[in-house]
Image 1: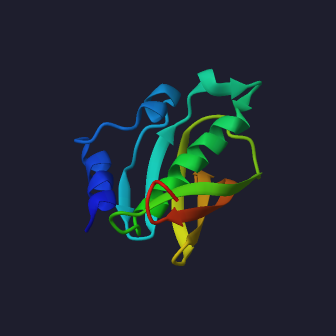
Image 2: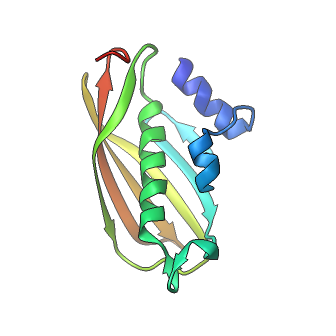
Length: 141
C-alpha cells in the first residue's frame, strides 16, 4: 500500500480528518474501500432538498468526491490526479432514506482512468455518474 491508500484507511477508521471542503458540504467519508472500489451510506438530509427532493447539484458533489476516492484506491505514490470530465444521469428523485454510494475504477491507464459511481436508495438505482481522471506525474504537470 502507498500514501493514497493509507489516507483512505484513515478516512474509514476516522483517524484522518476529511478534507475541509467535504466537511463544509457535509459529504462525510467512506465506509469501505478496496482496490478499484469505494462505498458509503449517507443519510439524506432534507435541508438539502430543492422542492421535495435532494438537490441534483449535491448529488453531483457526492459523485465528484466518490469518483476521486475510487481513483485514489489504485494510484501510486508520487502521482496526482484531477477530474477532467464528469457526467451524471439522474434516474429518480431522492426523497429520503439512506443513499448508498458506490464508485469503481472501470479502466486504469498510465495517464488517465475511467471511474463510475452508482447511487442507490433501497436497492433502486437513482443516479449514475462517470468521470475521466487525468493522472499527473507531479504537481507541476
